[in-house]
Length: 320
Image 1 (cartoon, rainbow, N blue to C red):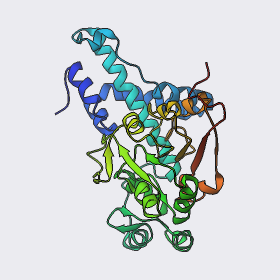
Image 2 (cartoon, rainbow, N blue to C red):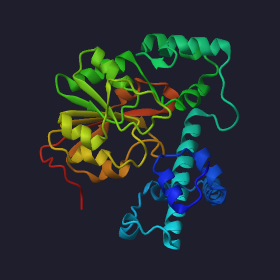
Image 3 (cartoon, one colour):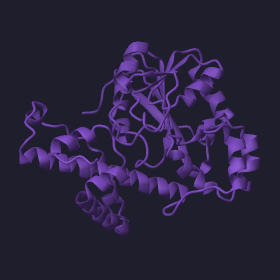
């Protein structure tokens, strides 16, 4: 049943409904958002597109009236509608950027038997349980898949946004060394599982907000980023595919004791990462490691690995 009142819509919005559910529940708002996005995409103005992304990723908190329970008037209804449209814009932009990366924009996504069997053998232990992929095997088998562009649209619905090569895991293990490590927003804990298997002291954590999509194993701690950082006091933090415009990465830069932060994500700012906070913080020096980026699979994702190292003056601050 779709939420009807502004209060019901607000509570529903806190549970992270997907774009299809939002558009079905609020068709008039979706028409407004769709028309705005279509016009911007048609003009292909990079400056305008960047402004739209920043607008969609900006979080607006309820003012004191709404927090205290004054939610019956028109002001609150207008606030909720604005939040719904903002969430629609954010999800639609992510979907557009993901489609651009995979080359799949319309129609049903489905592997045939040949491509499905090869992809399963190459990338998974069984079902949708991923395995570390040998780069040698990948280079041999991947070119044989003529439906390769369908892979990510198929698995993204199950919370899989990339695949990790054996070589990537080995290099990440060297960077982490014997230091304590925490993975935040770990999802099903695949990356932590791989690193743990090669001897890394790592704890996977997630706030379990994707419980309707993922099955969280016992090895993943039910903790948001702030709580995980406080409990485990890691020297190294790693995050794979952090949501675009998220609010939790800034806590890493503020946490004393964190020496290294490793981000695996997309070069598209529509898809992953809080680039505003990356550029605003001054406690860490950071850059992409292209050799590691080439070990994130498949290459069509144009993924990257960024390494943040606390600098000598690092105090967790931000530029004014």
